Amino acid sequence: MRVIFILCTVMLSTGITASAQAVEDASRSTIGFIRSNGTVENSSRSTIGYFKSDGTVENSSRSTIGFIRKDGTVENASRSTIGYIKDNGTVENASRSTIGYVRSGVVENSSRNTIGYAKGIDPKHAAAFFFFFFKP
Image (tube, rainbow, N blue to C red; front, top):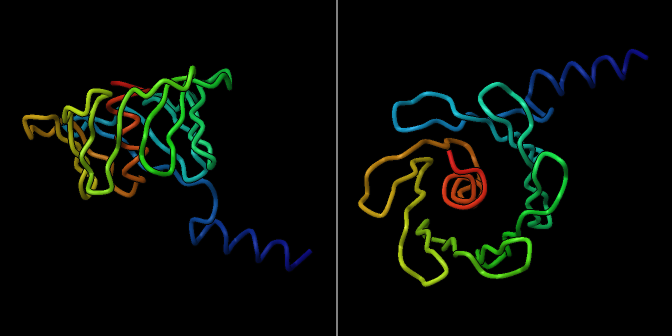
């Protein structure tokens, strides 16, 4: 029993639980959260979706709304390509036109204007949040 208590204490103090990172708009207002387990929440902490480890993106009802492939291709639920998230942080639409950038937790539109912040969040999840699935 003592070992379980110590383990739980260590987990809480080191953040091993499903901690949440804030997603902010350009004014630094919190518009949502993405937990380390992939749960996506709005600013009221209601679950609005999920990023699963296999690349599947689900809405709050657990229906598949899209996919993020390992190569950065973003697909809708019908598996049609709707965009690309490149390793360098460039975000493109299905026609390969640049629609934005995600670098060092800063999210920018194609004109390089900051539209949000996603510090500590996987860049592919940040791009998917802002440009494809959970548009603020």
